[in-house]
Length: 94
Image (tube, rainbow, N blue to C red; front, side, top):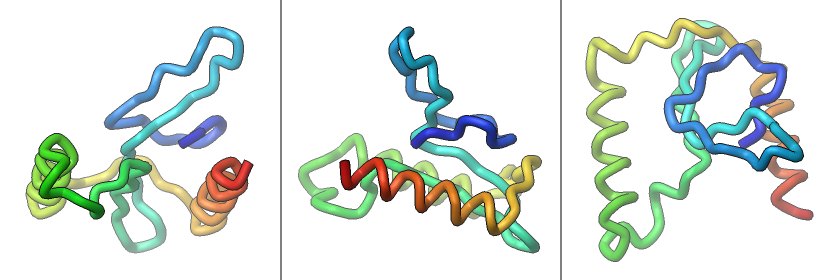
């Protein structure tokens, strides 16, 4: 997920190649309006019985969401979130 220009700090960062040098994240958190968001670009729903690493990551993230530690400091506007999701959908279709 490209997060160029957004004020978020990735929890799980992806290292892009040196030619593009984009800011990429697989997981990040933010406040959006009055809510809190944990965004994952990783599929954490399908075939978890055969994907133990994804299953464990999902379990760990769910535990984090229920904890007092889940207090995102960065704020995104609803428009920034919509633009992020739209741009990632466009990239996925290419």
